[in-house]
Amino acid sequence: MLDNLSATKVSGGWHKQYSHTSISTHCPMRFAIFLPPGASQTNKVPVLYWLSGLTCTDENFMQKAGAFKMAAELGIAIVAPDTSPRGDNVPDEDSYDFGQGAGFYVNATQAPYNTHYNMYEYVVNELPALIEQHFPVTDNKAISGHSMGGHGALMIALRNPQNYTSASAFSPIVNPIDCPWGQKAFSHYLGHDKSAWAQYDTCELMKKANENDYLPMRVEQGEADNFLVEQLKIENLFKQVNEKNYPAEINMHAGYDHSYFFISSFIDEHLLFHQSYLQAQ
Image (cartoon, rainbow, N blue to C red; front, top):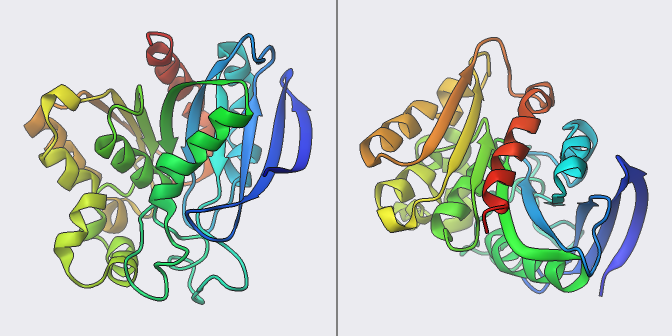
């Protein structure tokens, strides 16, 4: 059952927030959806799923990215889930990069996190099924995200290439097994056996990707990003893309940082990128 929390008209369409009880995370979850003008049961539209970064909720992208005008023109719905389970019964830590707000889009295997922190299952299976059941959308979908969410988008697309027409990311954590953010989260959620970490690592997944499963990717990265060297490891993705001849376009941008100022500067290009493949389906 969906509980409609808000509805606001924007760019001729509607931005709506909903909550529901998740079977994956065993707690209430919130998501936002933008429906472009003209979306109806007789005119269903494709969906771009957006995964946000550390400390974010469903609201950051919807309020700051400036995506509605282009999405309305292209006839694309946008769905933004929360970044983790939340609630008094959900384990948390006094840390911005772990716990609530930092689900890392994995299925946790370690107590006490494994009951609720199943964001991979939520994003890949539960949420799309819910969206397709309750809203005027097709099953054509693309996926994108920022930072931790960029990690989630690329990783999920590589693991489920049949589910998405295309994938993109802004400032993604592309090699979490080799950076402090990823190592902290993975050790707590997945345990200290690092062989279990590779299934959630974009660079490791790309190493094993079969050419028949390649799908188009686009990545934007600011050269003035404070997290570029220590956390994001974009050079490791360049290496894998070149070695695998993977169809991923990686664009470096002088002067841009890690913020939504950067995302809003290039979100139209990403929507156009995804539309070219969503239309082809």
